[in-house]
Length: 434
Image (cartoon, rainbow, N blue to C red; front, side, top):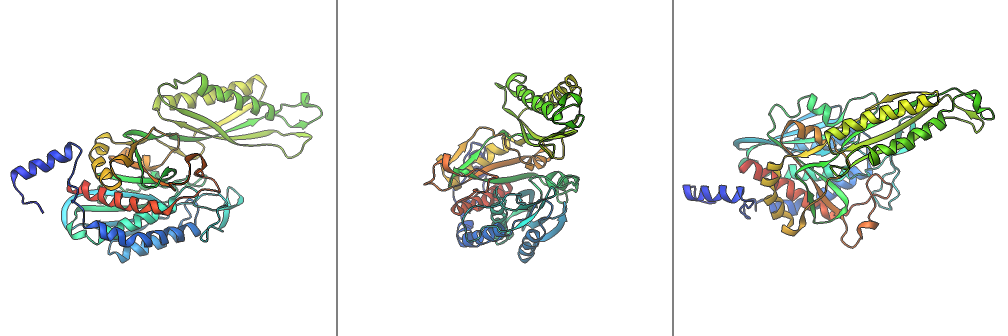
């Protein structure tokens, strides 16, 4: 410990503000993190083998809540349906920092040959589906459980409070239900005690193990799902002139929607995407149906461009349909809508020294914004936030060969999880101490 005197205090403040911090500050964590690594991997494998869909993470929540209670925390359950919150009160007064992990799996059937591969099936949108942690939320939960255990062992030295937020439904609540970060915020998860800053991470199957990717400002896009129902007039396929063909109308709408990004928004300013991911209509080869449904997603990194895209989708769908005597109903959003995930620049600046101490100077990399989306954005709208990417790709695998998120082949190298525990643990302590 440094002796507390005026010169030393000024030196420490100067080091922190200039982007450097004492390397030995949290050395008491190192043996604790080394000891818990195998346990974190075991937790991850359990959650991977037993995934649950959004707002249905009942068993996952039970495991988390039991663990936090065993650590002596104040535990809240049933937050935003299945969310779990643990509150670790330090031995000294101070601010409140929150750490967040998402818990839900996806309606994806796993194809990876692992001894702990998921065999779970469930129902999604009225269909029987496989369920898989195809985006790494199992690793997020396991990492945060590890952080909770590490920090609980040094709680007497912590100047403040750490709130552990295990969030359901990041992938979007089922249609007709509320959920995720938005509902957690609405229910007051950032209050009692009031959170001063929040940190979160996402494992990346395309980023090498040992590397952290970050970006101040907007790091992930806003997302809005949308639905267009095209109404025509059913008729026999042999006499299309006697009806109004919503399939042909839909084809014209889909092609026209692609001109929004390519011709109607300033792409030199920010990226944007409009994608149709589903089209349904008709039951027979010789019957033109009365209705076709299109479902898609909008990604944007600028608020004005986001509004423009919404307006253009409505205008194009309505006018293309009208030109062919059809009508449309346009729902934006259909069910899910997340704002831009924004990292508070001053918070990023002050926490970078911590990240670089953990991963190494050359392994903390400034990245471009991406058109993926995250509902961590709802937390970061309320309080200063910092969200970063953690490497999960084996170093001997080429980036182009690494499986993408949300696919049956999704795979991460578990050796990268230890850095996640180290980084979140030290970020929480450094934030509270500095």
